[in-house]
Length: 64
Image (cartoon, rainbow, N blue to C red; front, side):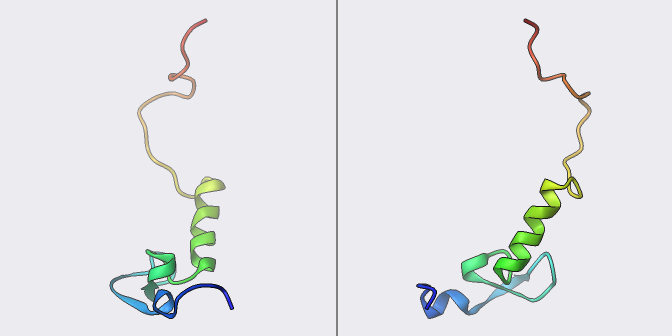
């Protein structure tokens, strides 16, 4: 037993899982499963996803 209430595994109405398109599940929202959540995190960590910026690398550093 995982310790989750049964209602946590019920599909949610609304937006689909952003990773695979299946209905999202409350326990993993906005994803449908832990696997899809982990895949999304991996994409952020390996640089597949990024936030665009006009700053050059190192611009946020203060001079010593």
